[in-house]
Image 1: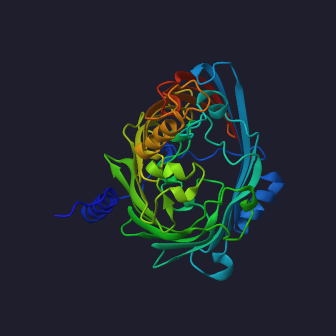
Image 2 (image 1 turned 120 degrees about the horizontal axis):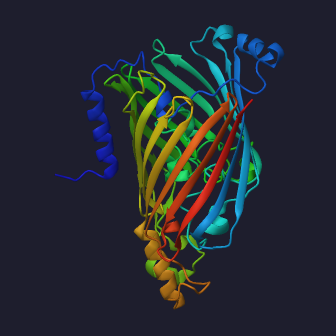
Image 3 (image 1 turned 90 degrees about the vertical axis):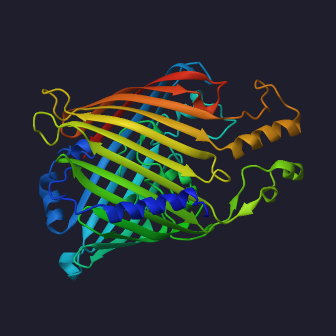
Length: 453
């Protein structure tokens, strides 16, 4: 019998899950303790009646500010102290079109993000930059100081609202891999693992595409779509572009999501896989190194690259009968084609508690641990480059370090002194930053501030 590829096993498991699960009562399903906490009343209130007027006409929005600080207390690649700071403004909006068109659930959805201070502690102090970055002390760092269109799409529903269709300049976050919230400040503990494919991006980067999400039962949703794969989507020139210039192929994702209740406590589970039609290049060049280290044609090319992900987020306790207080546990993982993806495997385990103290029912405590396994193809290529250059001393600036595994952890406490403000101090521990045993383990102090307008 032919062995199934890992991606085939995931699809088989997904189909088995769908057929085995009975009707899930999600009428009382509440995601608050899972980490999807609704923002409080904004700083600007109802804006002298402007916000209610906009909502009456179908326009809703969320305007927020976020900053993230990280300070290296000990260890890392460079030991001198440094305080890194980044921030962003984000506007997410939706215009209801059903009341004007009569089309079921028709709406325009958009997202604009302004990021500032391209200042990342990971590259400044924590990790040896001679190897690829595999985690970040500030998850909102990325693509520099810039204002970007995250998405702008049209969506509507069919079949008595069971099928949702979305099309336009889109981001995977709108449809896929929505099990884990992004509340931790470390990147590998923030959200799901599907962005580790590097086929698509989180949050503020858009590509053309269309997706379908069909509710097989009230709790089980099947998701798929066709999206542009454009390696240049993160370029500054693409921040507001409608062009497909730079596209290399299409991305075909499939995901199954299950919302359920276990012992009357909500949980959400998912499993997914994606393929790309774009050319991929082998990370290990072997004998081809002699053709020149910067020549992309020296790499083996192929078209059958894949990436798979899975996750769960389950509330396990309820405090004093309050549905919005208690403990939830999460697990998410992603595995990629090690031939072309230097992040072969990444997994995260998390625990969140909302309302630990009676006097602070809206406060959060979170702890998480992530594991990263770097592709052996990438590591072998680093070794081959050293052999070609006759290098063996890690301290030599021309040496190519050989990464393996890394384990990172974070503990935070988030409190909400007023409805529109959240303050989140925390601490991070980095074991083998960048996957290098030669780099000293690091301790990082963090502080995140969120303001809702």
